[in-house]
Image 1: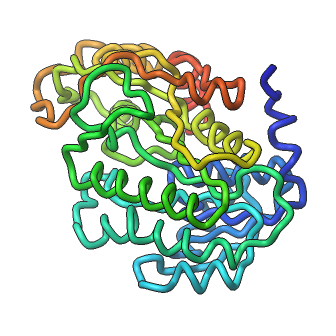
Image 2: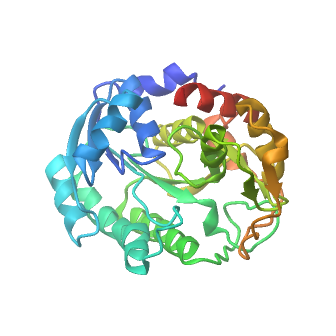
Length: 324
């Protein structure tokens, strides 16, 4: 039987936890849940002043510390200085459309993982009985392969983002195995919800409520596993509770595919945006769009007894309520 949410949060009471990228879209939700669980949080951000209103709005409490993870050696120094018992790595680069700098992508998605994993053994505090290093991976690591995207599949990423994320996953899992510490990678699929980056589908539709202009969209035929952000964050916390074992990756997904078009139609209805404003086909579909069958989450279910369950209607409604 799966732990309830309250039971899953209880082990973090008083535990020193470091969250890298704590003010990012998913990082703030991980930090919010850990705050709820009573963790002794260290919140690593690039700009504390910019992060402050985010933490206030999301109800996050902890020690906010600035760190420039682009600087080689910064992660090592930071880990040694903070000595966390558990580490959640939500730092990354390449999701936003304007994040296309190759140096930053490979540094934050791959090299950083090498630096963290090499330092973690000597820097971490002892005492955590579960998996002390949890990293947020990406569905983009699978790339062009078809089928149900099992974690054991031979990945074929089609973008620098996907390639750098896959390299980072391999780097962490290999060095965790060699270093003798448990680690888990949660491969996140299409995560949506409050705090999502502007320009993505749901934020675009929410912003469109303030006007009456047509909303240009792709044809929307591509199928996606849409996962509500709070579920994605909870999955990462549950991975940290796993007993020590072989370092491995876990798909974090609902197991159900929905077309982008249907997601947009559902969101428009919930948000009160007239369907007539949705201009499907006005924008080209990206050449590297993934095509796959429903995503298997069997490994996550077997390990935790739990999988994301928030429906699209509930998730969109909760996003609207939060943003209000």
